[in-house]
Length: 245
Length: 124
Image (cartoon, rainbow over all chains, first blue to last red; front, side, top):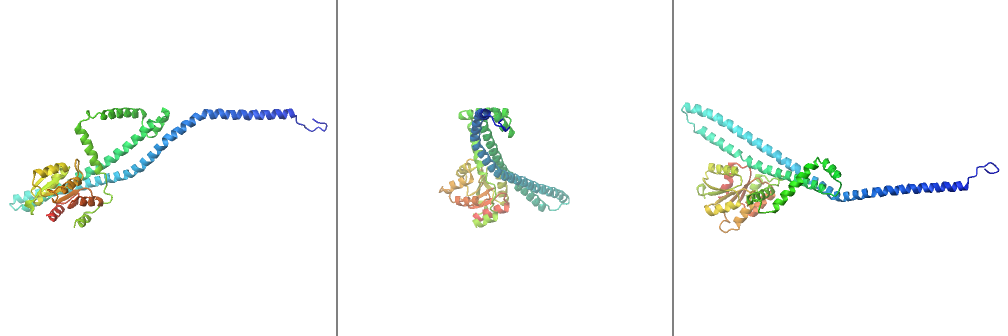
């Protein structure tokens, strides 16, 4: 205190406070550096993960876009297959009922000694109509082949994505979490991968694969590729007739 | 040519469809026919039988209908054979492709015997 009783700060105390302040800040900065040092490996791993995942996410996005496009197409084909089958079934049932009526009429006509040629002719027509209605079998088969191909493509794309995750250089528990979000059990997937590796190894040895089986698989693939266009922009039979004149 | 003169080659990988087509042909009075399950088999049948009319599907293994017709049109012996294509393919591009390959007429499945008769008669 000075002679007028005013508070005069102690210059030494001020210096001490400043030093304490500075030391405190240095300590704070040091702890930040320590924190940074600890977090850097994690950040590095995070960026590696993002680098690996980014193309995969683009692929997933493209897959979703493609498969979303394919799914309505496959759904349309299935709906059409069901409609064709129902239509053919009802036509066949109608003809069978008519045949049964004709048989009853024939029985009566024969008992009465009447001419039955008309009834036989109608029976014959009914039989031919049923035969023609069975074309649905071939038409529906081709639609189902297309749907099967779409489903196989989707399955393959998903399998490729899961494989990419499985092969990433990240912690196993992180992989498990990612696969679990897709409902994939890691143990099951590992078994699947091992099976795939064994099958792949087997397929590289041509002498083991039976020729008929490989040929059949190739033919089925070729036929599937040929049936993959849905009738989205149909040309009517009358348009076709106009074209050929 | 009349109906009795025709010897028809029916080419389709579906045994059901071949049977239906043959049944329709018999009903329409075309009694002589032979079958094949794909283009390659059809080419063999051409060598064995006096085929003068062809009904073919498009989607088939080994050699599809379009490939078969292209092969026919490139062969002096068969290039003028009338070809009727019966197929599920109903898009405009498909029909134009078939015309370009040399198909003479085209029916989209399912067909009726009346349509079959009309198309065959037009080509006779």
